[in-house]
Length: 109
Image (cartoon, rainbow, N blue to C red; front, side, top):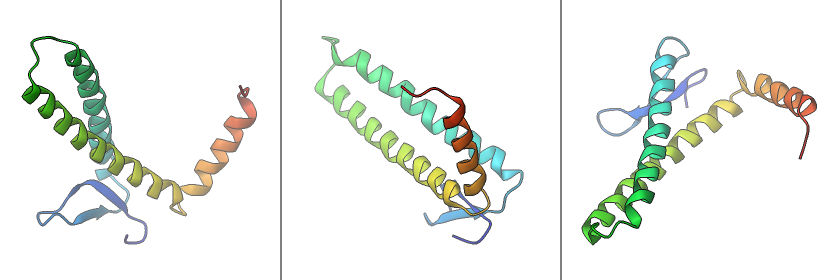
């Protein structure tokens, strides 16, 4: 990954990862990551509602499974990208500092 850049949640024309320096593109990248997660959650709820319906065909269920697999892959990619940002020297120390402060302030179970 290029230094001081962020991997974007989309790929280039040939499927290669794309990177950008911090800035305005972060807003679009954050929105895309949120969209990926929201879509996966909504489709998971939909799939659960379909499972017990008697009128659902095997083909319907196969299509749901394919869609859910795609979502798991996409959400995994978002998690990987967020992990990369947490380990980035520019963000990591601040994130860990906030985490320590929250752990001190919040009661444990």
